[in-house]
Length: 308
Length: 239
Image (tube, rainbow over the protein chains, first blue to last red):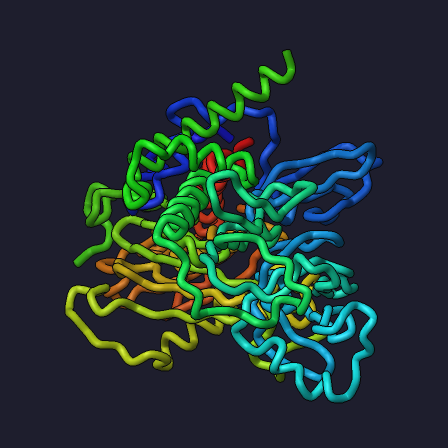
């Protein structure tokens, strides 16, 4: 039915005044009008029969109905609804950054902003002394010495359990406990899955872009042979490095506020394009919108250049 | 005071079958998984959804599906007189339980075993139909959080004056000892999620009242649908 037929009903999307940032990019024409078909829960996805029911749909009276608010995607006969925004949905091989919330028997529970807490088994971590070290009863008793509640770690998803919880592993020197740095949390749907999620950026700092929406900004990437369990929190990072990290965190936040996908290229582009502003000015809504818009244009221009 | 004037208009100038202006905004609270702010006339509600996340209460965690818990609170300055309300008084708790029941039946809970969904609702300004406005706000916030539901729930509180249905009543109209029917439907269709009746209504007037409530609920659904659609196209990831 047409909205005009409803006399006296009006939809104003005016207040509260905050978080108008996504709309700002809309106005400047940076958001292309892709032909995505958007549905909201309860909408019919397709009326014709012969389709397979995928995630985000259910059938009622032979009709396929959406259960999520998002875009309809079709692969051959399988129809799914991909939510525009949702909690982190883990996949095997994802790099995640999470916080240890519990130490249990032979495992740590890690909060990865997934639907359930993820578990990191004692048998799937690298302990000091090499990969082939056997895990003894003493190790079980010393678990809290390696990782305790509140520690931030980077890990990889090893397995997705049938109930949707994730099993992590840190069997690689690049994974492990994180020491000094800034943790920025953004919606996980904005993170683009790439080949590499650990980046030493040319600007003089490093980022770990967790697929679960945790972005870790650190002075440098470390590969400690002892599994990174020895944090050095006394070490003073130079002011120069700290200001670079602060600018990077501002860039990640402004990209997230404008719903721009977050990966190494966009972060670096935002960092370079923000050079004319002070790092603290990135909190200013007008400056943030300007930079986000410039980033989108730059990446688009590079993409079309590559095509040519 | 009469609810309907001699010319058939209400105190705020609406016709009996006319709902109040709706204005809403989604993703207003960046910390939450989904959030919504809704204004229905002068009633203003803010709602935030957290989850599904690991159940904090082990006893409540079930292998069958997730639990839904609702917290409802009213701001000190929400009504005409400034009032410090205790949290968890009987009336608010009853409303919160009704919200829980309504949304437990709509959310596809079986997908999230051992998990929990928290819904926090704050009434910022109260001008009648608070239960229905809370339900509308929660629906938007849940849809924003990407939680699977069988449809978007919309709710409306209606009354009957001399056999004539009056929809989406405001606080001034609620004062009178008139019957009040709160009806929540799914996706603006006929499926009823929640019905609540206060005071008494004549049997003969009930069917007209129900029909008017259904119609009003489906008009509200169209408003929420438009707001959600617009929000979706704006927040999709660029690049």
